[in-house]
View 1 (spheres, rainbow, N blue to C red):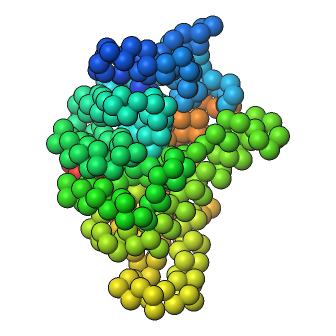
View 2 (cartoon, rainbow, N blue to C red; view 1 turned 45 degrees about the vertical axis):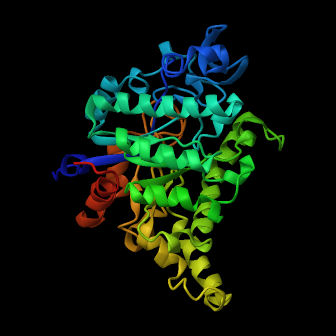
Length: 389
């Protein structure tokens, strides 16, 4: 019997989340802010995150690994979720048990692009909370600073503070930068606007990649059934469509000239899947050529697919049918993830659906794929991006 993939390759999981412990901000932010800072209250047996007097989320809703149910059902709180979601030593033990070598860490409470911090209202407090989270995450990842990879949140509402935080984050050990993938949803300029050039330049200067996680824009429809479909059907619909939001993000980066102006900047589309990339780039190349873009911008001398191939990455964790073509066309641009411990993560526990152990999924997804491609997608691409030894 041949050796299983995770025994042959040191698999790097490029999208996981930390369920922030209750004291992340109360232990690190100035006491002058009182209950304005994010804090946890137990209401009718459920742990809920509050900002001032406003409930925002709860650890049970974002931590579904091992839970036999799906939204709106959820565990009640910290006592009912895997300790590996919020304890670094337990996370390492979980990784060992699943055969995963390293994991890249993203937030929950502050939002997938830091939009949640806007609820704080006060710019000084917003900035202090971003910095507190970034400090906490580096401390948390110090349990094994090679295998646990911190990604720094950004105060995207102030580009000058972003520049400062990029340099500070790099200096304390962050290995990537998290950007808001749809700043227009928060009344900020589009990603392609030169407004962001100092941010791109700063990240390029410290030689870190920039992550654009799905759900970093306005995701109010995810929790609000505006179409009258019912909670579960609406959740499935929006959860499917949210992947496509990152298509617009990538289009802004390519068509807007960000890739052209910053050719050494690595950009990662997180949790958006990869099967659609071929179709999008074929359309982008066709429309780019058909519109004769180079008549207007002769300096942009590559096709969209060539810009993508040079510096953009995509992550996948559940796809089967659309992978083979992506593997063949973009072996140097693909990354594997599990989304642990979110509702759609790769982890046993759901009674229905496709949820399974990461190692079992890898065996199916990479069946018949060349070993060189498997090694790139599961390890080398991510190791290079995040400096994993």
